[in-house]
Length: 231
Length: 136
Image (cartoon, rainbow over the protein chains, first blue to last red):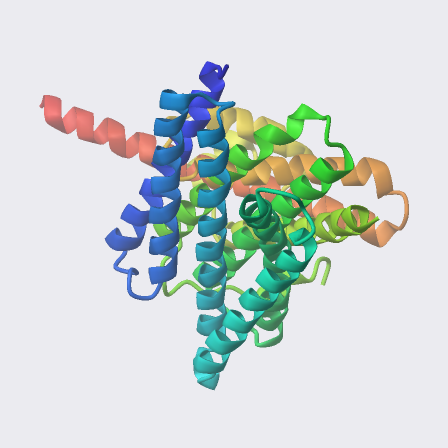
């Protein structure tokens, strides 16, 4: 049974996701950040869908379980494309966006193939195991890719504050999810981990909404000062 | 074994991203000058604020009506400040350089709070002026 705090988290998550879409359009950044718009719309629809299915079938139902994990996998794939979009912006001047797209698709296919080889031996519900495992693996791939992207941002001395904050908040989100999944595997009986994904689901849209609202497209910062403590 | 390795790598990445994200938020306020009214109110006379002032400044910030857009940044900086306090207690004794860096970061957090207070005071003043204008 869910309490009022759970409902509040649900409502807050949906509001933050809708807020990001509104902020992107209100700051006339939709063309530049189209993958973010698609991702946030997907997150919003998934949040609403989960709530509807929860109301109809209950939290412990198979329907809710399947919808949660299948929608999560789709949303993570969308987030993966957000990350690739940010890569394309950082390497904009090098005109390598086509190569990036091909590399991203190859990496996605590679992750799917490795995931399949992990779950291929499981008996029954192969697709469900595949979907659950794929989203976990994509979170870890996301951490590694965001780390590489952050390295490129620092190396290329990228100064666009908005881009820097989008990359860093995505890094926090991916790595926090990877920590949660790792802890869930290490201590499966501990129930605290079930609250982390919904809270992170609020943190990322809140950070992005803040970035689009408060940081103008023209704002610049010295990335080296942000990245290297004590320098 | 693999879960443990993923845990260690992810925690390292999380800390690095989180610290850099908070520093990117703080960097915007570093170049903002405080108004005379805020300086008088807080007693801040130099551009450098001591880290210990953070709690007092946050209490003053809470007294002012929220302008609606700095809640997320404030929450992130408060978490960062708590993290810095913890780091200072746990490993501040390792080297004086690390200890000085932690203290300067705590000072940046306090300066961020002072800038937030400055903005909220300006917002409250605008609000009051609008109300006065609508009544007259």
